[in-house]
Length: 291
Image (cartoon, rainbow, N blue to C red; front, side):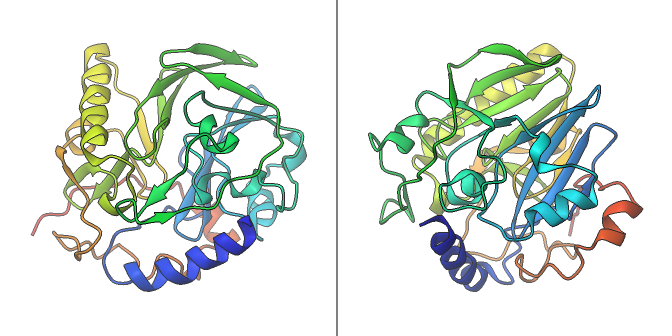
């Protein structure tokens, strides 16, 4: 079902969001010496490397060019033994579904115990304000189920799991080595800073806002601010930008303002995502654009 659903989503969402500046994925490349990024249409998946060991954050679509783009970055799929899953939507778990290429069939996946209920069928994932139910994800990987606040190590990589329900019931973000926060679909970066993620795709928008406010308070209380890396709109290490609009939600029905000239007209247009560009420059952070 994942291949079919990935292709259906590509067709429908390309039409629905064209020209609205909703999705602004990073192209394939490196954020810095530790974090690499692969672009899959409108979504990004990430790889964190430390002492020659690499973990993966999210598993993207059921995407035919994943292995190719990983190889641009010098990452071999067979070396990925651990995958952190923020949530189980089609564009975050496709590469571990049963009808995928099986690149990561032996990898252990980590997700919240609540999010796992979508995989078991105890919960149903509904989008478009509850009007459409996504197909059940079928995944056979070994699972480690996490609780809010769990701190654990993979190799010598420290990971803290933070529950941020709203987009889905059991969405988690991951703070890695106290320096990188992978947020999945918790945050959306507009031209004027961060918002709660897209309104039409959330399980509970009010809960998502409360979770974002709690996440902000948690990070600011620690005083050391990490690089914040989103699933669809890039990254930033400027706390004023990241949490500029924690009381607001990205409205998927309108073209975004202020206008962002760097946003692709169609997020599914990958012509600029090339091996040459991936190796040329570091991926720039999101920045303020004011009209």
